Picture 1: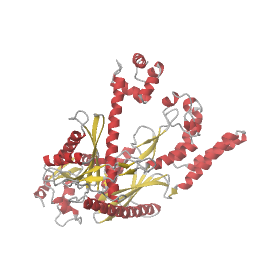
Picture 2: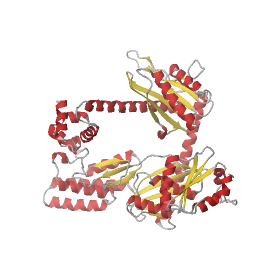
Picture 3: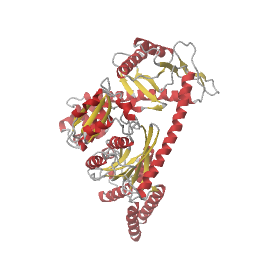
Picture 4: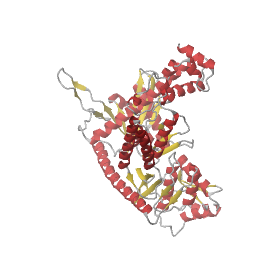
Length: 609
């Protein structure tokens, strides 16, 4: 145990945050406490506190720093900030770092539209969700537009068209941009959407039934038939949803399953008594379950996500009260965190726990299958170790302009999108793929040496020439032999005679010191994984290149207009959406943009005409 245990009296008894640092000053763990001295004493308790991980952690700690706060809630916020900053090894890490999709609707607009967003802001709009996948959102919107035909596009874009869009023709847009519906009628549609997304389907059906009867009595049979179809569509949609009887309202239910050093947490989303989705989080069990659950709640809800009325958990962490205060302030409404002991809520938590166990089992099966594939790659490509971290690089440009590089990463057989990197080539002019690849590799590996994060295996999109570049860079950085490498040459057409099917060669892998390439069995899982890695690097490079090229084109077109600065270029592009629409706009339309004076609008119009 390090010598710092004798200095415990110097720690304050106030609430705050403590940072445990290793020998090289790296932050190993960040925690918070209502009483810092009492909390830190528990780590040095000779009798131990039952947590086998504590001695393992404390043997690596060489210094502890503390930061005092006025309240426990402030300590919670500071702890979360420091975890994001330092990413300590022994704090939990939510590897599923997706921000979930929600549906946004701003009822303050004259003709509100639905938007899919990933960030939930405190902007006065209504947010519904979260939805676990893009397909779930698309399916929901498809049903909504079929029942309540709200507009799809910005009003300014639609009004520039000579007629309503195709969605209006198929009955999925009411075309407010062309005056086909009044504000009052459109407001009825919005009210129905809000009620439907809030889970009040019976209320919507009741309102629509009453309006259908009135229309029928007044012999407006077409409108009555349309309302009848809406009622039937809502009924069909409701039948697809799983209903959970647990008091209704909005709830997030947390389930936890642990085996050995691994933990699976499942979060089930219940809205108005209906289960709309779930998401699982694989974690490593660093400390005790109490700290792990509290840390999970802090990390997840610090994101821009929908915070429900209730959060049901299997047991209450020691900082539950401060968590409730923090979440209530973040949401501007009371949030309850409950560890139910009986009734329907307990059954929900138990169901979440069963889902967590099932997810753990499925993940274990997938993990074992991926390990087998990685072992096959190691054997077939004669690698020195299992390629747990694989990186693939690619270069993209058009005739030597806007040259960029990409790096995509696969960890334990799974894409790690948060580790992807893009490189804008700075030292190479013109079309020189070899020199560009050399720059990208040197930048990445130098950073890896500094940060202590190097790949096990590098895959290059190319043949012997590209492979030689990698070997040269590795030799210069004294990494030759420490990192395996291969070049993957694309298949090529070998037969395309008239009247015959096109035949292609197999993918070839070139290895250092080996004359003939290695060919993997067609259709094998190892080849499929490496092809996906190569294709993802290619896609990532091309998307970055197109993005830069598009920005350059936009800038050059508008920067040439005298008197139009960066701020007004941004206003025009935000309002019209593209340079093409700006070019097509009249003087009056340009001058209607807030923040663009008449003389600037006239200059833009004269430039394009």
